[in-house]
Amino acid sequence: MKRDEIYLGNPNLKRANTPIEFTQEQILEFMACREDPVYFARKHVKIVTLDRGLMPFEPYDFQEGLINNFHRERFNICKMPRQTGKSTTCIAYLLHYLLFNDSVNIGILANKAATARELLGRLQTAYENVPKWMQQGVLSWNRGSLELENGSKILAASTSASAVRGMSFNILFLDEFAFVPNHIAESFFASVYPTITSGKSTKVIMVSTPHGMNHFYRYWHDAERGKNEYVPTDVHWSEVPGRDAKWQAQTIANTSEQQFKVEFECEFLGSVDTLIAPSKLRTLVYEEPQTRSAGLDVYKEPEKKHDYVMTVDVARGVEKDYSAFVVTDITKFPHQVVAKYRNNDIKPMLFPSIIYEIATKYNQAFILCEVNDIGDQVASIINYDLEYENLLMCSMRGRAGQVVGQGFSGKKTQLGVKMSKTVKKVGALNLKTMIESDKLLFSDYEILSELTTFIQKSNSFEAEEGCNDDLAMCLVIYAWLVAQDYFKELTDQDVRKRLYEEQKNQIEQDMAPFGFMSDGLEDMESFVDADGDRWHTDEYGDRSYMWEYM
Image (cartoon, rainbow, N blue to C red):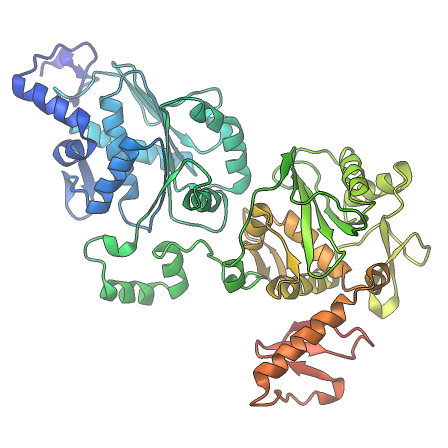
């Protein structure tokens, strides 16, 4: 090829408007490649490997199946282990799509822009090794984008709304989508995704190794149940040649069994230090709400003569923190979450009106608001400006700490509960008991998602780095509330005693052949269950509910 026929001195790239005289053989080969992307990948795609350098792409059986699915179906979601060539497979198909379709826009999106550019770099390497007669002439060739003379373009960017705002795509490749933070994924789908679904031939390829029960989990789970348009593909690690039981044992020995389950068995639940036992979290399912509007999800409309509690966690309305509340039906046991609100755009001055409206709708629900920071202002507006009667208050009562009441005056009274270490610990551990014993029911995806990343840190519980716990904290406040004496007066339900009795009965059945464990503390009337948890029956007088980790 002449010097004026190559692009910017790169002998592997053809300049735009370079004339090509095709042989009959080349025409037939071009047509065969255009019709069959697997054939094209085998014959003309080259990849760079660590061991062998530049070499032809030799797709495994499951990789051929993936390419065919990408070609036939509009929406694909793939749950794949690490190191299975998922990115290479997608790049091979995108290269085919680029060469054999005119005037199309392709987006390569990853958690980080640098990762997306690296994927584009691999596609560019493969493009340089396609025969010159098959190439389209190059108009621009950059680290983050390229454009060909057939009008087709590729952009590499991070998976965010701001990176691709205002653009339209014929195909989106979302790499390792499970690792995109929830708040970024939400913004992305809200602003970018409609441009995809509006077309009749546009495609989405979503590929990832699982990383908790986040947006990727939701799309995968819905695909399995046939509740969205995505075609699910589940690749097992054993489908990769050379991976057998011996390889599995070696990998576990070099990492851990938990890491293997997440990265190679593709289990969605990664954390082992979650407040709620992983075995329980795996059994929980979510459903779509009856209605959804501006952050409010309603699962059950208010019922006459039913009692409701609303627990509130207030954010500043900036960055990724959410103002949230959860409405729980406490009429009968088990309690059930009937509505939830979660919004990171609402301003604290506007939040009280929403709380007031929904609480009023739910039969004048009792409201307990966390008042550590800006929450105090929210509670004050609800009480003084909106004059809501069923706002619960707390006061300090010596060793008992904060105690819930309503409309009373007393020493150190505040319009809600201050989140202290004690409140958080008691609430968290009560929540654990109630969920694991099916005494609190919910079917909300975002609550479930937060609980899968609500983990133990320094003798407390909080969200994993980059995750949220706003709804989880609403439930912690609820679980602390139901253990209060005032709750028993409101509902005639002694939740503490009931949990204690049920737990004790179960322990007695489990331990009957062996007797209870003796730890030398019998005079405190406490016992240790089979899980190592201590139950105190008299430390708090007749409040036979308090338990803690040993």
